[in-house]
Length: 200
Image (tube, rainbow, N blue to C red; front, side, top):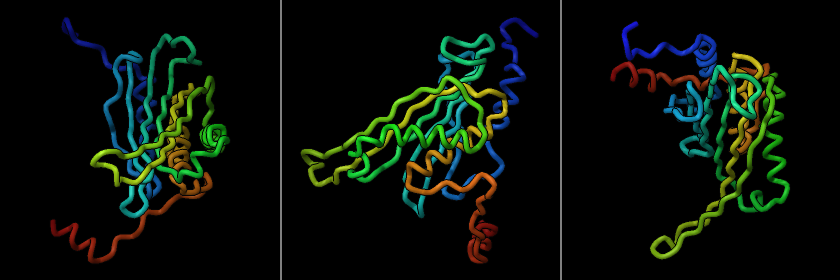
């Protein structure tokens, strides 16, 4: 190794990152790799997602993997997951005083349903109301839910945590989660779509 070369990431981090992109994803969800913050831990990776119904984007989120071989204060082990979800909601839902604990239970229940062992979980639930003024006076009032959370996974396989995070986004978007033993099928392409795709 020449001077100035940085050693590759630890094998534990590489193995964990390999489980961050599941083989099958619900058809309502689109996943993409996104840049990860570099100052929170020696090693990090991230994936972003959007939830769609038809062409309408109902929720967006990101899941960040942090890895520090020495651990950090408040962590349980060398890994930490940081999740963010934002979804549009009806005003009567966001005004419900129980929305905070209910939204938090969406996350913990999803983790438990998928058997994703976790520890030291914490986070916040925020309701946001956006109103237009001036030349945006005619814009409709929008209300959103934002959930920010972090927890420590108990092993390197993060696939169950990704599945739970995807379920959380779907629930926030008003789409019921699938049972863990049911696999979502993507709609079959029509012959016309297939011909168009192969001709381009």
